[in-house]
Image 1 (cartoon, one colour):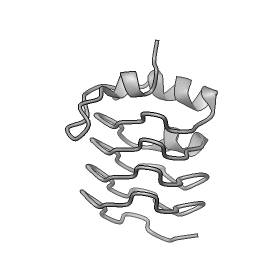
Image 2: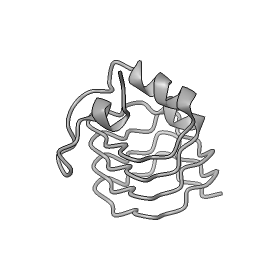
Image 3: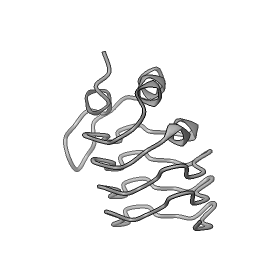
Length: 111
């Protein structure tokens, strides 16, 4: 997989990119467009997704290892139900995405 630990992808257009099993430990994906991207089984410990667009992205339990998801848009993202619940329980599952206008909790379908 891709080795991109601590990489800076701020504001990057990564739509439809494949990060399957990639090492994105500590990466900064703030404000990145990850629409339709595959982040399945990626190492996301300490990664920042503030204000990122993850609509229609493919996610696995590792998204829960992210450092911050404030303002991220997860609309129609594909992830396990238990992972969605874990993200909803996070204190940083707040805010509104600046590009899409969608609230993080709404995009995660939190109760």
